[in-house]
Image (cartoon, helix red, strand yellow):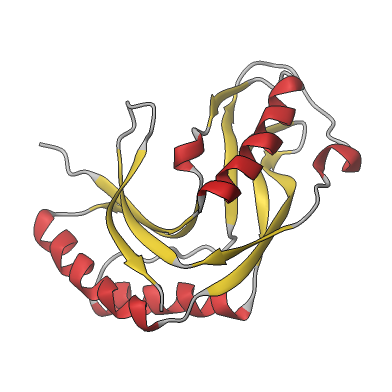
Length: 183
């Protein structure tokens, strides 16, 4: 049996998800040929991708993540749209997350827990974002202007993180299996 895949992320509140849905809806009207538009319940800010984990490691990690609840709640600002991949045929369409010291601290604490448990840690620089769409298909190209990608900024409170399990064949692909509230 294949191991399930997991990641740790900031949970977004309903108001934030609704705001992101409005942005996503606008980009859908541009008929961009993305294979996959992210379901509103799958919006999140990844802190660490974990990949496959055995049940024993998953249970230990779940316990270790309780230490995160000592971190205070904090505000984040999101807005403006960007892409990963070729600008004319992007792999991913996303909303930017403005990095701040609180987010960096949370990210670092999670990395420390993973390293202590000898679990995989992302080697790439941390680039927080919220994915709206992914997997460009077709030969069409786009030219998104600054007017397409500039949005008003939205501030929201980070008060929960979650350990998510990935269900690639379901409509809602990410299901929280452990939620940790910040103090």
